[in-house]
Length: 237
Image 1 (spheres, rainbow, N blue to C red):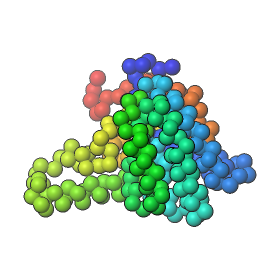
Image 2: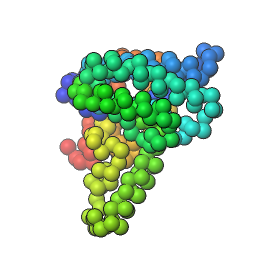
Image 3: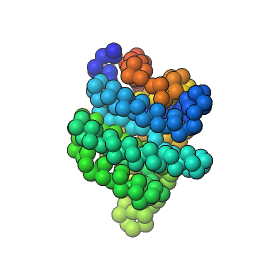
Image 4: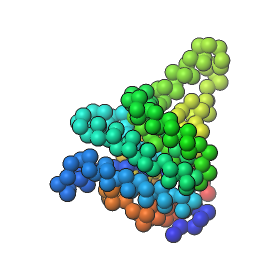
């Protein structure tokens, strides 16, 4: 296990490989998503036990709406069921649920479940679970730019005052620190429109394991790899 001083404060995960996991076993793709819920539980447990304070999960991208309707419907039902079933245990563990992304495209039912889970778990001190739902980093940045432009047009700030901090404060992730470590399972090595601004100095780790098989031991391996990295942030040490 890695030195406690080198534990990342914020870990973000692109949970990739559910569909391939199911197809390899002759199952429907949605069954891979169901199997992936247990991996979410394992990742949450590992993060909390190792001292990680923020865990962001890329659960549903804006591009995912282009998947077959049956798969999207199954995912929406799984979101609702999982949120309802898991909230009491997360509350007991002191896990706070937050969401980033544009929730307006979701049905009223999904929005209500998300809002209720956020309200019920508010103030949890052990870990903040950030769900990226209907999330696109480019869309997030575009929304932030529109808000900054509105403020400038209203005379609330001048263009000369716009800084990196201004932009960061307008993003969905403004309340949270940037991720220290980004994990993408399944061996794919790209960010896929995930936290493009925030992950500019994050360490990356790309294990071959498909998400439903991701274990607490895999999480530990990610932390050990992170602890070995020399993070210089562009400086010479």
